[in-house]
Length: 470
Image 1 (cartoon, rainbow, N blue to C red):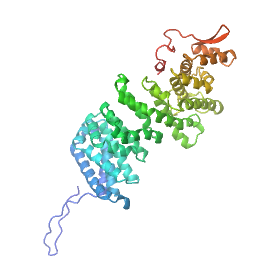
Image 2 (cartoon, rainbow, N blue to C red):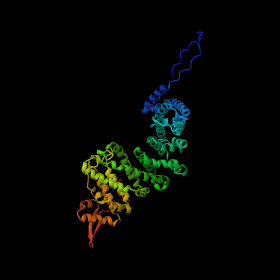
Image 3 (cartoon, rainbow, N blue to C red):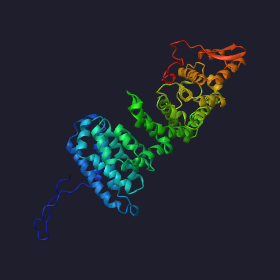
Image 4 (cartoon, helix red, strand yellow):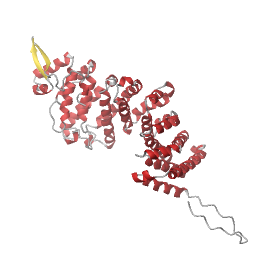
């Protein structure tokens, strides 16, 4: 607060009433908040922040909301009240930083009802249909704050769900700003538990559930559609997925949108080295989507939904062929090189891409005769066999190729005969077949493919082969 001004003199020289302390200007308030936001990036300042600090932030946020509420009646016909929106965004940034790895601050902020104030402010901005960067920035920062205070805090999650579900989530998930949709989805899935998942999937709340699925189709580049199955799968770990049918149902519903997004983006990865900028932006999304599909297809309760996705198997085989040919012709990131290793530190989204494609193809063919036959009709068997060679740069490549071949030939006489004839015509290297645990024999004038895998071999088809090369 500014110091009191010196009392002025009236016209007759007598002292006038003392002036009230000058209220800090909007600019001064904004600068003070920015300074506080910067301080709260450091753990030592977060740990020593007093409740009065957050009371001050609450006051600024309440004032900003009051001004925004007055302006919202005819927002479309007037300029946005920029100072109040800037103050709101900075207040949310301050609260967002304060909640990072600091349960004490989370508790103080929750007790001051800042969660309710934030949700109400966000809903006000969304209902007003205010357009432009300032309103969107305020909403994005508010959602980031809600995400941080909800992290590891069941009480905060409960407050957010009670105040924000379904209106805030329904409006945010269908928002034209991809980041608003992304941040709100993270808040949603941070708050989900079995009871809330059941609530989400009720027919009366389809206004929220449907945008979750549709946003997977519309914003694959945002990254959050990939995180959704990861978050839900983590909720299933440590227990039988069948005991949580609601979460399993949600994941099954995500299979199709994830597959569609992958089919649209996957061809950008094999030609990454020479792709235009737009393709460079799609490549990381394609790699992340492939990871999500691999993980989902490795779950017994989700496998069928992924196997049934139209066009997914064809896309996986096609992009594997494209990567194989591109590597031979151009020597780009799809060719065997350190960039294709499974090293998590590799900067390229193409790292290990072919290995993951082979893993997905193997999962899609596990116990599924239609998909096994489809790979043969797509001439994918010779392509997969060609990846059975050991690659020093990507040791998992040959293992996943072997895994795919074994799933392709399990209880499929036509695929076994196809490979046997390839070997007889010199089109299949017997050494590659042996590395896959297979050999060709002739019995009664017919060629047959026999498994040579020993009991206990990690590549055996006994048990569940989809989980043996995780």
